[in-house]
Length: 572
Image: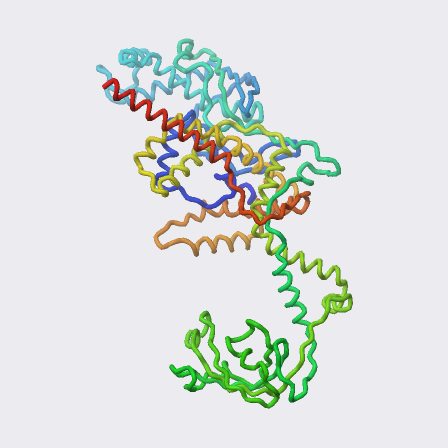
């Protein structure tokens, strides 16, 4: 299904590619953080919900799934496993590895170690007895090294099947033993059963809250408020005038009546290029720029500058010599921006009358319209055009309400990895704003990241909930993105690619589809929501609270760095 396309970013996906600095930051944080595994590689193809299967983010990458060894040991948990649910979509699973599994894992660890070490009395690559290997590695400080490797192998082989097959759960991130492997190795006996207690994040279930009163579905009737500019009455007036213009009636004028603004006439036009002095006729213009029986409506901005003004006051039979200026953006570049002189002969003149908006006029536009419904539809059309500018504000109001309509625990693995991406992009923006690489390197610490993670955690959790909800809604409401829209967007993106830049179509296409799908879901939700519009001339809201929090954190870091520097200088 197209909705199974992988989502590496929650929001909106903006098709941003990591710069080399952002990638370096992400890798540095990954190496120092609680888990070096990319949580988004584990997004399952389906997530269970109270309504059935929930398509979300795509299948887990086989290259990363729990960092399994290349060699399978064909293990099984035999007696099954027991599970204890923990907060934030984590679980503690107790697995009893059978004796066959502990022996296979230990033998494998010994075989791999034999290939890598050199021990006097044994040729390179020969099979070395496990006890000899243990003694040799213990002498170098690696006590129980084989058993530790065997335990790691058991983890890779047993945890995923236990979670998936025994409990129907999708693991996310790297599992961790509740007892360190080095301590657990003391009780490891090859060929004897071994109990492993493992903590692991799992893909969360989604559960909708009860629908609000009067609604059948939890996600309809969403309430919220968003700011937008007032209705554009000026644009409405223009649209109304254009409509009346299209239905204007003409009545012949007396031959001696003078043309005025708003009137119409039929003219013969013969054009010439203007010489440098602007008044002398030069070469005749192409036929396309001249002509007979040309209808001209005397109104602002309709024709070449100077034509309408030159006809005001003219009568039937008059010949006016009118100097005009062709528009700068004219497609015919030989005429664009040039001056021309026209001999204009008035053949006919008519008085134009614009109709009033009545029920009779409305029926002439469309049979089922009245004056009231015509004005209502016109107003709606004008407002919808203006409202496009405020779709992001509308969508934010919907997202805020939607996030409260479902119950889902977000795994810390997902929060951590999303925070890493955001932190990396923040460092990149700092560099783009002129901050030195040395200063940026000083900011990339585990403590700074944890502080940043705490600041953005609530937003990440909300975005995750919204992403899960929108995918579920798209499934329940059968909302899909037409192929041609995806293709159009891809072509537009390709046009923006600078020469020499890489365009990874395979990576970008799913993000494009995800973004378009999300927009369709939000449009659906908006049609079925109870949103209030706060009409204001104010600019977009500035998140002062967040900026103040970031500023305080930055000030605190600077004070700590200054204190540490002073202490170092005092002790030197």
